[in-house]
Length: 135
Image (cartoon, rainbow, N blue to C red; front, side, top):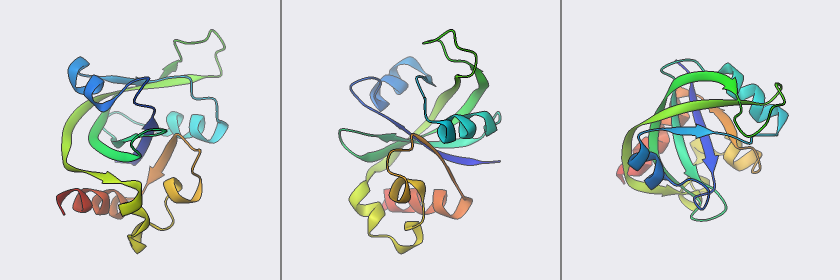
């Protein structure tokens, strides 16, 4: 199983929308590295949902329910989308500030590549964010 962090602007699609609709399809990803990360996702992979641009916090956990497929916002076949379903909301949102204060998370893409919308986490990083949600 792989672990991911997915960023999306809440004014486009929020964690509340994910819960209400029972799924989330990430679309309009145009960064090649983020696109490559989407193509590496497999059914059942776990992902954290992060509000970018506003809020700057991890709010929930999801799992991949549909692997890479055509991005519905374009007819250009080089751009892909992945669909997730919510697993659960975190006990407490984990802010970017809190993540930056945790030495074990100093190398994650959220810190090192701030504009990257889809990033891999290792299991320890994923679990550390879940631990921070309980604090």
